Length: 247
Image 1 (tube, rainbow, N blue to C red):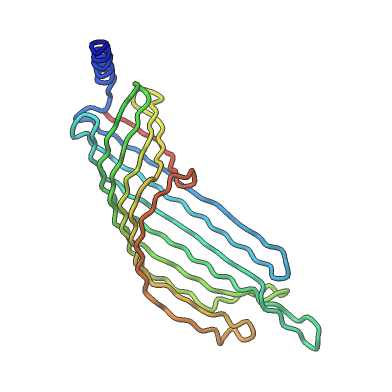
Image 2 (cartoon, rainbow, N blue to C red; image 1 turned 90 degrees about the horizontal axis):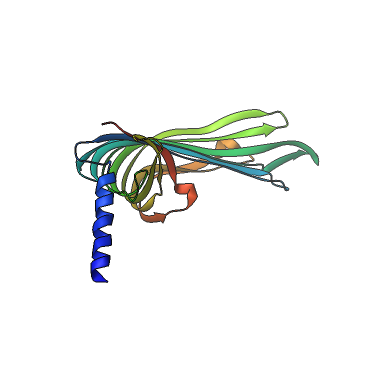
């Protein structure tokens, strides 16, 4: 029985090595995309809405320093836009509706982060492979904040605060991936995000909107530093892309 098991193991290893396409000296490129689009509307006495749009693009190039083990570089480009608005302030003149002020708070984050990574591939078939990727990246970007209000029914829009600040981030991730080769060299890829450490440093602007006299709106600017450990393999965190072997 042991001889049979050992023979089957040898046969499996031989098949894997025979079908291996991720050999020493091979280059590859890939590019992944993740995006999220969401919006909420609440129709009541205080009408409110929110939007949250985000996308990340991640092109990379890797080199197999040994069979099934690749070292590579790339970069992440991230853009996140969040907007929240509501109608909270209504002004009456002699008990008759005169106008309302609808404040809107929006932020946009734009960041680019160079990446270095090490990735190990396991190839159970000629077309399918799974990999584990350890990556580190350092990001720099801008964090734009705009606070404004709209006077209705006139539809007049006024910006009462606009600020652009810098942001710095560090990312350390251990991510499982899946590759499927459609041809001998070209395939599709899924990155499942996984376990990570994120550190972010930025300036935040907190302004209190005065609906009865917007010119009296006040606020403060504070620097915040956040560190967190994340584990996320939900589909919303997955990145989809292409994978190409170059030689």
